[in-house]
Length: 387
Image (cartoon, rainbow, N blue to C red; front, side):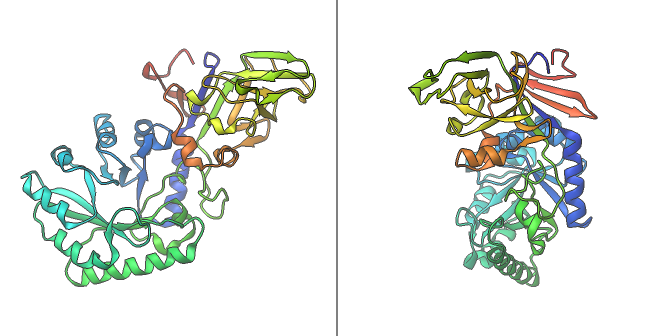
């Protein structure tokens, strides 16, 4: 990576191991829906999906365009759109064979009115998320209504958890009510091939939720939602790195960056790194975040700017030079920073930090320690010689 000032490294072998460990944890009779929405949480949906396709039953996205991106890249697995779509998108969905989420019978009847090929549907039941889905009290009648519409194929029924990472008892209550609903539907003659509820936290900590399909996202990418490691053995697949572009010796009393929010209290050594909020590095880490340089944590000083951020190198035993590697997320000389760390310093969640990484940051995809694919603003290139 000698040419690159700021870049991501994604380890596809680790992704494979993580999925293998998830499968072992839930059992061979449980399928995996890998959540790759939001560009696979910043990891690159196309590259991740191609690497994972032999281990998963289907992929989960949020929009029709995300589904089209995967299909156009050659992904053959079934793709489920997890967020509601518009009626105007029904012809595209039917033409490409995507599965969609329904929150009521009205939309099933809208599909029938469009005279398209039958559409595979999963009905979401709102057991406590309070966002989308059929109301729990109406679900029995609504799902039977949907199943009777010839223009749809009822492929699955699912629910979603709001607090599976923090309140397993509430989550188990959701599971119990949801499974009771499924049992009543099946007793009434409704065939439901896929029954699912488990997001990453529930895969890890609520075994009752596994059913016959699980929906890991963060867990597959190697992070536990709570930040702890209670169950499935996974490791982060993505590191974020940059380089020092300038080292400055700054006297006491010198202000650093916009708004003059930081003034040196001593003679200091300040490093400039070419990463900022234009790359997706959070502005809220201004004066609070840390990076790794010389194998140690060094503090961010002054405001994070669009393209550059400053770090205090004064206390390092050996001053780094321009070109030396700095780690934003990952490990250097035994010291580690995680996306959970960045989220905590920025008073947010790791999902937002990962999803916010800009497309200006090149992604290098590794197998067996070598770059297999390289993706930048210039496109996707195998074995890119310039890295």
